[in-house]
Length: 275
Image 1 (tube, one colour):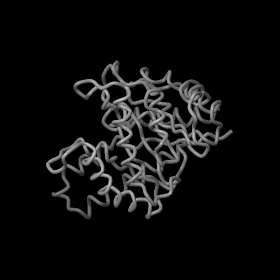
Image 2 (cartoon, rainbow, N blue to C red):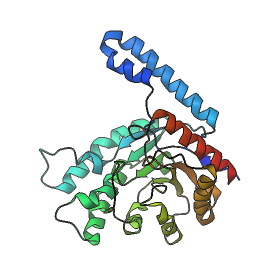
Image 3 (tube, rainbow, N blue to C red):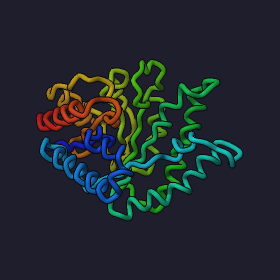
């Protein structure tokens, strides 16, 4: 069976590109654009070389709920802020999908806000809190084919204990109401790997595809390809090979060294071939 592979985006940038960005004004926009294009070409070629599946491309965009955490000097309440962002982001999502690309909606607010709210909410209150945010995503996606949408859910990529993360089982039913074909989520790190069993219990829409994190950003240890294959097989056994795309837990950029990121992606591709 052929298991498709991808990643969440946010790969570590090369030293050449980082230096070019620092010298951007000095070198001029034309030269910087050439350096940027060359770096993009190199990254795409490297992914193809190690076996990460080619796709038509996706662009990550912030969710209304995550954007709403930035600031508010106008709206009267939280729900109005989120809906205001939904209306604003509708244009961005539409521009991405009209260009023939997939929009990946990054929404760490759905999971990581749980232990950031004071006073602490009940599970029921928190479910209502995130449903407002998912409804806002759906508002922003009106008129967009779910085939061109993937939602990235995570508990924040920061290095820390994560001992107060909300369990996936408490929010998964809310998450599944999003108008997206693809659901990307953490499933490789030590705090959430065990939650693969949750997917045996949910009523997954028949056309929805899971994009579990199979290699992670939370450790410098390179996952063994056989472990990668075992992790993938858990999800394949639940929903079938056509509804699983093996991925990373979260963006690798800013968390691990560039060389480690490529080693993890290579292990991901090799492990997928073993399934």
